[in-house]
Image (cartoon, rainbow, N blue to C red; front, side):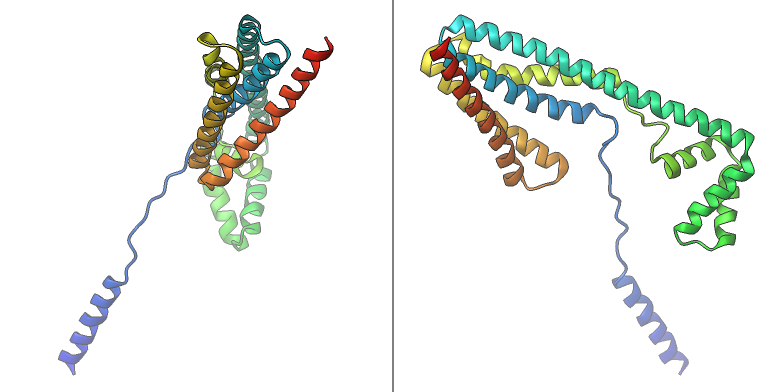
Length: 252
């Protein structure tokens, strides 16, 4: 019986090892910093807005110089505007978070018991019993910095150490918009007329497809669907400005 028992135990032990799942580690992308988001949207906006502008101007006035001036102005104005908007929005968000963190820090210093009870109530809402929740809350409150971080995450939904970098986002946005806007303008440095129009449109479509694929890779969405959506918006914008440009060219 002892031998059989030992064998059974050994067999069960081996069996449990054979079904043990490997320890898997997954990593998350930085979705709060703002730089990657600014770059993606910068390229997309620069591409769509400038290819539409270029085709609209080309339809209204086919002179190569007019298209180059309009395209360059659109590139610089759009890049500067987008960088400024990105900086202001992220700076305002960071300042708002800092203000809320300051209020939370003061409350933690002046009303530690109330903050402990508040945190315990959050843990209870998440499924812990009252004693466990209060024990965890008290443990968190022992370190002021840990307490601030936990309260910020639980109450505000933010990480105090990841409020984003407005300057980096603005620079990234400016460069990305300029790159996207330069793509459809490039043919006009060497050609003009219908050939340059067709080249701009084709480059715009190819670049829009590339942006869609890059965005799908970043977000782990369907590449075909995301690229088709990106191209669809580009085609709609270009068609609208081309029609408006053609009409203006006839009536002005």
